[in-house]
Length: 86
Image (tube, rainbow, N blue to C red):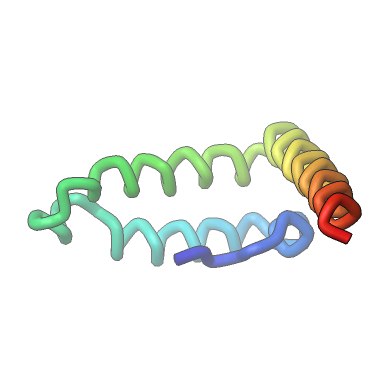
């Protein structure tokens, strides 16, 4: 489950909103709360890493730029595929 689906939404979030969303998600995914989930530790670590990136302004800016470039590249590939089908 994603809290925010797009990089544009993440760019508009304040540090308080990011921290609040992280804490809520961390409570749900914490390995102590999910002893039966073998992937709980990995999921929790992924949320923690995401939080570290989003709270650092430079890292957040770089991450959002990379995400935007990936999306642009994907849309270019998709348009090429559509042309090949037609």
